[in-house]
Image (cartoon, rainbow, N blue to C red; front, side):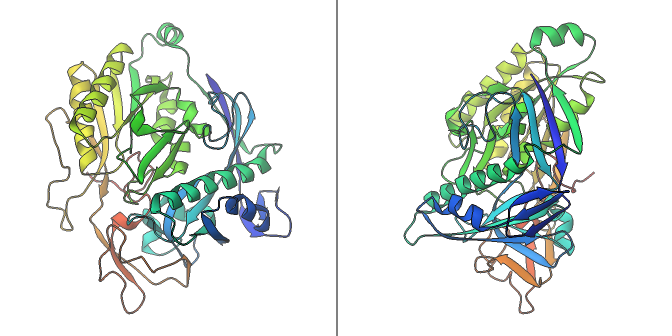
Length: 426
């Protein structure tokens, strides 16, 4: 499987009478996309805004972040099972509008949608303070159930992102990166002297408002399986969850998974990147046992020497993480786990809800309970009506001067468990 990813660097986003991509500037006529959103009768209105790095702007409540892409050559289309059909993706050529993101926002669904600050101390903790953001604020119709509203906004985001991505179809990319994964027989012969390494990605799938989708299938309905790593670059994995903002994987992070990128960078040099294994995070013990058993079995079948395991979320999923770790280690496969910590505001509490001696190689994305004060911004895209209710906030979060006293938990991507963030610890 070979994919050429062409990156088109977006230098600016402006509103215009005509939607077009010209010399790195994305011109957007919001009216052209309103109908794509309002075609779902569960959304009553939509507005578009632009947030740029360094501006005194706060976006909240953030639901998803998506990178517009287009499938130029090869089977299938972007966001298979969601927008496109269900053909296997990950080969051919894909163009990405790099440096920008579509951010979906609107009235809160649950209590875990987050905040993106484009400047100030909060900007240092979110990767999306560095992207040019086209923000889509959706308002639900009265009486709509939370899960119906979540789905409506999720699907509207994919439709709009795919439509914007189409603008890059005939544009010459500024940069091209080629990714290739051979079949197991070929790579065994070609890289026989290199350690065989896999990536086990745990997908949030703990039920209503806590779901991830693979080719349109709710991940809680899958058994662990093997993907080519390039499939996620075409949107085969998308977010559909409202877990804590700090360690949620928005769709953008699935498209730009940093573990996959780093393993490809070493592929054929220091290691043989064999496969991307996806598994789910479950609620019931029997389901956790089943999925971790199957994940360990796949690692053994592939003859792996080592794996990196990344988690999504915290608390209950810590059990899935440790089960995966100790069962894979029991098969003779070395593991490194990537997680984050909920160690209390003073950093002195137990970091994970579960532990095992097998988990002796750990990378942390930081302590989500760390407290930070976010100063008042000149502009809010979305609303502050729910800011005291977001996980990591409290009834005293919103101060009289307009500043927010919060835990890092409220900041989108602050302690991301694929390493797509700037925070760690030693």
